[in-house]
Structure formats: C-alpha cells, structure tokens
Length: 529
Image 1 (cartoon, rainbow, N blue to C red):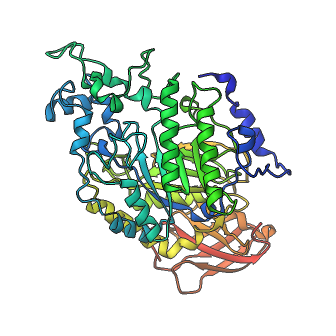
Image 2: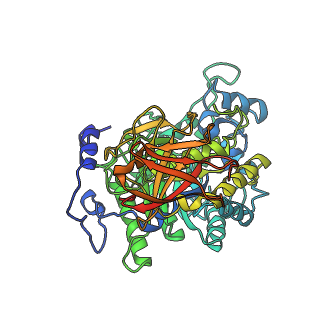
Image 3: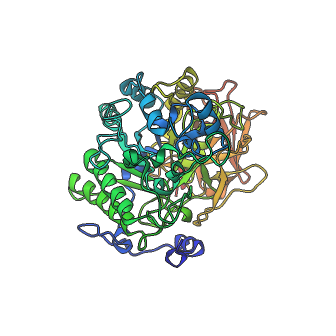
C-alpha cells in the first residue's frame, strides 16, 4: 500500500466538520480525476429511499458453506471448506471450482415473485450481485465470455432477470461487483497439498485450459485475501472492461465496489477512477445531464483508495456514532452473506437475525443520515426458505405503519437520545461505531429522530415499549420550541402529553400499534431545524 497517496483520517474528519460555503465544481463531463469527481452529489432519489434489498447470491452458494469464501478456501488444505469439499466432491486437483459452477442451476429462481416480496417489505430499490471474488460473471459478459451465468451453470442472465423484475415493480436498480480483489484472492487455486496422499499434486487451478476462470499465476506469489498488492496491467484492464460492460448493459442507479477505489498498485487508483467517471457520465447521458447514479465505496485502505466526496461512503455491517454530514449507506444482511448452514448469529443462535434487530438497525442508520441495503440470503436454487419469507413480511408490516418516519426524511438536530445520557448534540465528524452484528439492548429511553423533508414534522422513534407507559423526550424541553400535536403512528386514539422544562412527556396507549420501535409524530413551532 502506497500510503503517500492516502488522505489521513484526521484530515477527512476535519474537512467534514467544516461548513464549506462554496459549491462543488460542476463539470459538463466527469473526468477520471479526484478533482473532477468531487463534483459528485448524492442523488435525491437515494436520499429519500432509505431502504433497499440486495441479492448477494452466486455459485459459491452451492455447498452452503464458507459464507461466500468457498472458491478460495476449498483450495486451502486444512480449512473447513477444503475438508467439506474433499468429503463431498473429491480432491480439488480433480473436482474444482469449475465443477461447482456447473452444479449451480438456480432452478427455483423466480425474480418476479421475489421482487414482489421485497417491494412489500418496503424496499425502494433493489441491488443484484454481478460477480464475487470468484471471477464468475452473472450476466452475458462480453469480457468473460465463457465463465458467466448465461453459458455456465444456470444458463440465465441473472442480472438482466433481476433488472426486469425490479423495473416492473417500480424500484430503482443497482449492481455490486466484487471482482477487483479476485486476482490475489483466487490465487490459492495454484497450490497443492503439502501432506497426505495428494501431496504435491497440483490443484486444478494450474490447468491452463481453465486459465480464463482460474487466472494466471501472480509473478510475485501474491495470494492476499485483501486487495491485490500490485495487480498486473492485464488484470486491471480486464476488470475495467468487464465493469464498464456491466454499466453499459444495465445503466445501474447504484454501483458498489467491495472496498475503496481500485487499484492500490495502480497510479493513485487511476483504473478505478476511470470506472467511476464512466458510471456518472453514462447516467448523465440518460438523464438530461443530471447524474442519478450512486457510487458506493469503503474507507478501507487495505482495499484500494478512498477520497471523501467523490462517492457515497459505504459501511459494511457498521454503524455511525453520529450524524454524517453527507448521505451514506450501510450494507447489511439478514444473516450470512451467502446461505451457510453453519452460520449462527449472536442474537438468537440461528442463521437469521430477528425483524426487531433489523428494524432497530434501520432506524438508527436513518437517524444518522444513512440508508440500509439489506441482503436477503437465498438458497442455491434461488428460492428463500420459509424463515426468510416470514422475516420479510414482518419488516413489511412494520414499514406499512411507520414508513413515513423513514422514507424521504432528513436528520434532525441530533440523531437521538441514549439511556443514562443527556440529549446527544449534533457532531459533524464521522465516528464509526460498533459492528452491527452486536446486539444492542434498547430501552424506552433510547430514542432516534428524523424529520420530514419539508421541515414540518419531527418523528421520535422510541426503541422499546415503556414499562411504566410513559416516555420522556429530553431534547424537546420548552426552550427547544413549542409542541402543538403528538400522535403515535398506527394508533388511532389521542395521546396525553405535556411539554415542560424537563422535556416532552408522552403517555403511551394500553395497546401496542406494532411489535417493535414505536414512532411518535410531533408538530409545533420551531420544533424542526
């Protein structure tokens, strides 16, 4: 990693604390430079959407093991994926990942049915995985003509089928590609066992007949699981051609790369900047000169470059501690990234998190100017199991009651109140908080705020039902403004409430309007900023 090209976090945080009065530069056409790409502004549709669903699904689902790292770890002697592969398919010198791909049939894949479920769950956009680290494209790829889902495995254009279903249901459509680190991540297929009956026998990744899937051997032996240390020019050009092809075929409203801007071995990420500018310019061409595309990338220096302001910040399974000045996205999952029968989460010991946890996470993210992209884990055949379907219906039930506190909202003066603390003041720094796998035990003293886009309504979302029937919102003490009306979404009866110098005290009704996170709708004078 060439650290001289990276911007220190302290500078990024300082820049985010300063209210910059000058408008961002606007160019007729984005150039593949940081200066030009600083003209990026997050589209309004994304700021309003707040909740999207993601299909993080591909041939690595077949064994239902290793949570998306099967293609790498099946070639790593002693790893669980290697042991499972040996026991169920044979030795990777004979039966390799090329053969796993052929077992992926997606025979129950019904994108229209799934999209109806996702829309009913409250999703405003849908995102399809276009490729993972396994060098296999899920569309009719011009630059990976053999190893793609049209010619191998399902023999279907998975991305196209997803797009058609999303657009038919009125959802924005996006894609994610995870290909950039494949160069080093997949080099394990070049090895051989060091012990046992197959010691020294090369894995099938050494067979040049399959080099278009398994890649050439890295000249420096780089099998780094992170970003390639110094990817070859040939690989960088292949990545760029395939990613541009993806953009040109599907014109996505959202694009995600699994890390920073590729490539760290390149001259300041130039190859990646070429891709970003192509995405924005393609969108401008389709929308009368206005960019509608959201580019998401991570501030993870082990995976490329990050420049604050040229794209929308993505945090994987991680929360902000404060309101982020610019819109951001959290990518999360109902459980494992790929269907994995061995996965157990810390909340309930099952493969899936509860609707309560996911909704609480969404509310917290939105209160801090974020949007959640939620992966719904699919079986290898493309279907969902019954637990996932019930989970989606539970989320949708909550959204139908409380959606107005989520969609098309903006952050308030502060994101909320936390138990045993005073009202939290707005801080325009970016503090990354806890990993969202952690299960937070919220009480009725934990509150999250949003406000309507027009600045007329404040929503106070109480994270748990009050045992004593009352909630005190300290942020709404009398100096804050004058409260004139308070109601509880989903509840038809009038509420008792009183605003004092201690805050707004609300008496809740006897019956809950929903099962978790309860949204108060508040209006008055000088309540919103």
